[in-house]
Length: 106
Image 1 (tube, helix red, strand yellow):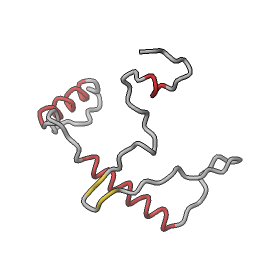
Image 2: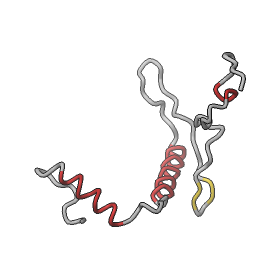
Image 3: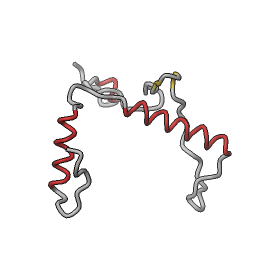
């Protein structure tokens, strides 16, 4: 393969996947279909505060966030077992003997 120092990383084909951008991300889906994605909120440059949005926009963003969290919570693989989670809870509690977080869950 010929090395071109002016080529982009994609053109060099180093076996790397494309970086995540809004153009190449797959949309998260649930029973209702694709979950809406929103751009970042506008920020006041002088104060650094988020500019106000309407109640309708706020409600739409909240609903999309709830749907996304529900969809993400259903993603599992073969290692996602109750035994594995009990081990995780136990290990966390072992590191916090003074204040156990998951006592009784394993």
